[in-house]
Length: 88
Image (cartoon, rainbow, N blue to C red; front, side):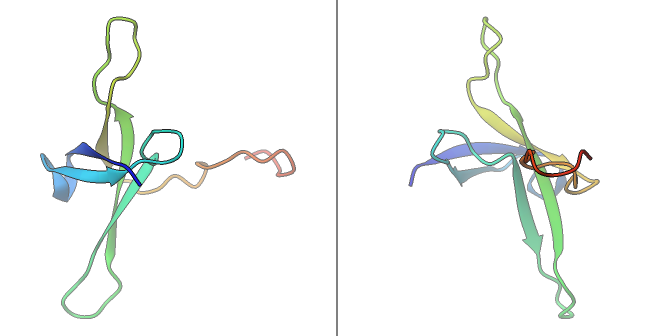
């Protein structure tokens, strides 16, 4: 599997560049979840990052990606839109 060094903006990973696995289409996942464990044994806090274009060239096409912190968490309306499901 290939990986790509990706910049993280905001949240607990602000300013870090981490390797993120690239999918079959050559793009990183749309969301990146980072679980942060607690010392007292309670369930970990999950921080969510959303993929946004990192740099945009003269034609308006993204050449690279970065992840921005999403404090509201994961959007339940995200994901594939299957034709047999009811509209959201």
